[in-house]
Image (cartoon, rainbow, N blue to C red):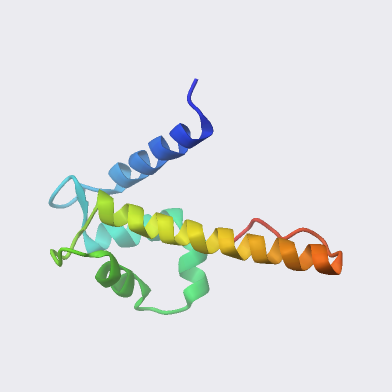
Length: 109
C-alpha cells in the first residue's frame, strides 16, 4: 500500500502526462496543453486571478529553458509554489482564527 505522499507523487506524474504530448513532445506541455491542465486541474486558481493573460504569464515564468514548453521539472515548480502559498494561507488563517476564536478556515481555494 502506498503512503499518502507516494500517492500524491503518482498523482502529479499522472496528471502531467494526461495533458502532455497531445501535440508535439510527449514529455512537455505546449501552451495549449498547459492552459488545458490549468483550467482542468486548477480552475479555482485561474478564475481567482481574473487576468486573461495568466496562462501566458505562468508559461513565461515556468519556462526556464525558454523553449516555449513546460517540462515535468518546470511543472513541479508551479505545483510546489502553489502548495507553499496555500500552506502559508492556511497557517496564517488558522493562527488568526485561534487568536480570535473563530471558525476554521475553509480548505476550498
